[in-house]
Image (tube, rainbow, N blue to C red; front, top):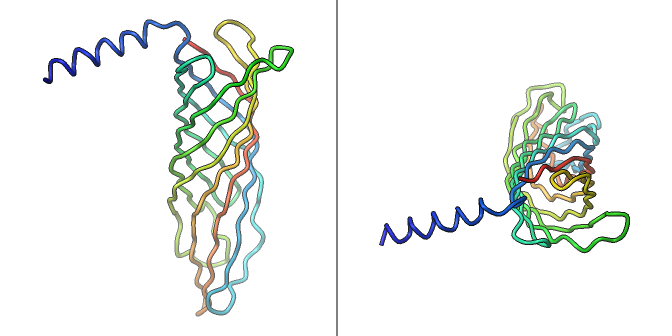
Length: 193
């Protein structure tokens, strides 16, 4: 039985690798904004407003199932002045037909894990929670433009729901910061092989 599974796996992988331009790698640079809310539990913890926009870097490894359907495995780093996010996610996308001038739009769903870490405390005291992890899910829309057979330029917008919570406590007062979502706008390239 193990030999049959190994043989079938080897045949399947050789078929996938033999197809031209089935796999791709890419990199994206962009801007991110995030939404957060503060909830007072006991008393009120005074804090300054947090930066809500930052630069991001996103890398991807992808596979094209067909001319219309592709998937990606991504790592994304978003650095705000007080907090940063490391996002690891999968996307499943549908590419539409050419809308003219060589632009091909696509839409997809995102699911993965997000890790948040505070670089600077939002209050003038020691922060109780300096990191948090949460599931992330969302939608993305974008378009690609082919420069050559193997090189594409991409533009993507993502709406990603996150659920990080940070507990703050100072002099008997307790509050929570809830991170709600990220909105990302990215430009990048893909190289197919």
